Image (cartoon, rainbow, N blue to C red; front, side, top):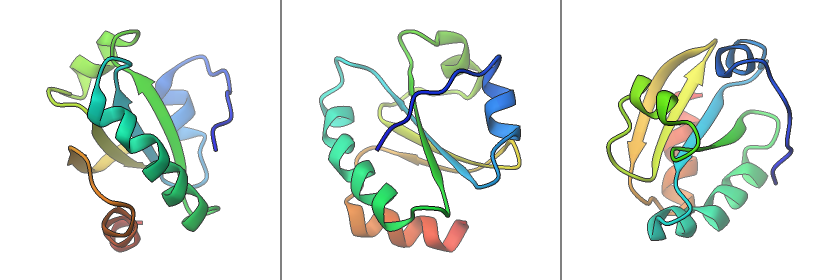
Length: 105
């Protein structure tokens, strides 16, 4: 599911994407975040080519977590053309998440 890529900045990664980017803000110690891993893999498979999923560890990137006001984990933020357009907090099942995202992307 995941491909590791290097970017000079988070903003560069968002603006260089040709599809909307769903950012999963998570932490290793967060149980619900771990529950989202297989769900996001299924979402990625169903929406392949229409969406890119990126994981951001809030423990390593505290400044990004603060910038986007991440207070609950997991938090998913959907970006289009570099701008946040949707936000989901907490665990959501695969089909619910796919349906929600299809309306927004």
